[in-house]
Length: 181
Ligand code: IMP
Ligand code: MG
Image (cartoon, rainbow, N blue to C red; front, side, top):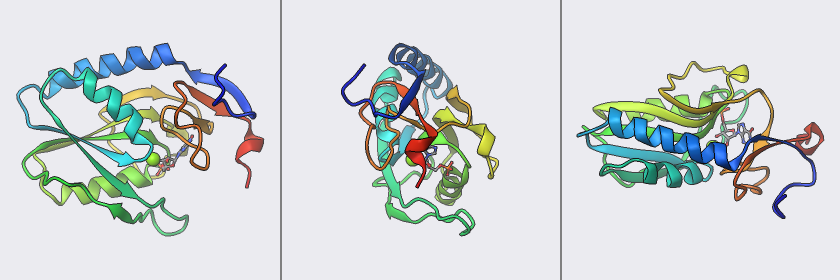
């Protein structure tokens, strides 16, 4: 039990050992699938940072990393998110993998994908650490998934509740009471 653990902790969904093993597998798979290509890993701050950091070291080939930041979409606004920090590098002609912490409704990834597509990458794939298909609104093509999990609010390994618990090494589900407004 870590001191970071929230008081309304319910149960561990994915533990640290399982995360390490799965990230290593994904890294090997990406290295194989993108061998010889100009691989660019792109992630969305802040949640994707933790997965990206481990994943990029599990991919045994030259690559670059880049970041963007968005405001969360607001309900009823048709899945429009605002980009608050754009990528630093041009991605035209490159093989881009959008690395995400979680795909839930799919609205965020959907929006980012359409934005990145307009910049003419040679290839554009999604690699998400967690997939929560139960609440999907936008159909998102996900090429690589760490873990598919049920519709529970989880924190850890980059995922937060009001900015906290990103620094936990495992994924834990919280009591519903914790996330009620
Ligand atoms: P979307 O619903 O797929 O657009 O996901 C939007 C964002 O909601 C994600 O990038 C996360 O920041 C957040 N999110 C979705 N599910 C969870 C969760 O279980 N824990 C923490 N954040 C979540
Ligand atoms: Mg996020």
